[in-house]
Image 1 (cartoon, rainbow, N blue to C red):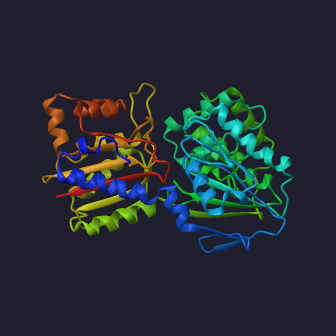
Image 2 (spheres, one colour):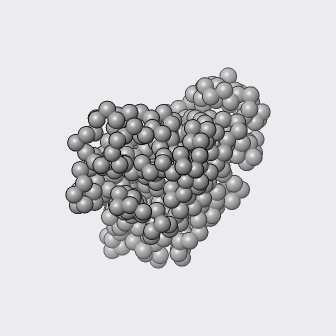
Image 3 (cartoon, rainbow, N blue to C red):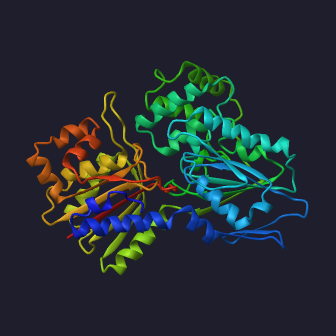
Length: 448
């Protein structure tokens, strides 16, 4: 079971239904299900099939496996079963857990969202495969990529230290910058991001199998596009730093590094990658469609609003509530949304994550709704910034409870201390175990 405290949280029928729907959505994008549905390998024909794409391995060709992301370990485990261990020469992937049972592919447990030394070690192990096995044009390198790959596959450019990467990652995550902006900066501080990882293994064919956590599935953003041509520049990376007023707070070495390359018009990452192919086998839309189908079976009237919801969680939850109150969705009683919001944190803030914050603010945003309502907002990977907390569930009774307990919701929202507030209300925090996947956030409203 994905939700550990489901029984406790299911105090009403609507709550039970909405939590069931979330679990259906997450289950639909588990690597095991996605990999089995998309990949096959015929050893006699030496034919690798990924969705509608066929890749034939020459008689002397070998298969190597690399990559990283929150789902990479589970993807590696399933790949060994599909291709068979005897057909994989070697491999290493970085993941933020080590629960997967693999025999040939090594899993390096790294950290997310702040990169660590183990992540660098894992990347070095991947790069070392090329010389150790003399990887050549006859070989195939399968790259397993999922959400979280940017942090889990750190490889700082020369002169940039790990602690500098850690600092700028923390600053970008709290600045309000969206994932595209964050990863644009990351690309230009890395030896492997922005297509450089794929280029490194040339002339071997690099085939990336991807579970996307990015709204719109932009390959240049997912895991910072390690096997995708880069269209951004050092100048754009520096402009993002300036836009979020980070030029005074970022490490001096990073400021100097970016400015020098802007001034000297240093060549950016590769603009073409002829040896790389990218295939998305799962994304947010997969989960939304599974939720929609289950809701229909439960005789609800579901509507998928979007799989690309982005922006500040307070502003977006207010905007969504306003549309509900104005009757925009009056013909539906189950609203299904995907995407990923990006909060901008004040210098002094409490604890929580974007999903807890979205849910907490919705208690106030929905207070004028006259019928009963229930909302759930979760990160599909099972960690809404805080470990083992996927997000939150709230309803029209949450406001009554807060008033009875004299909880100042607005103050907690202002201080970005949503987790503490939801714990006071009780029956709100969704406790989970590691999901082993990551396709972004899932939000559902059930309206009477």
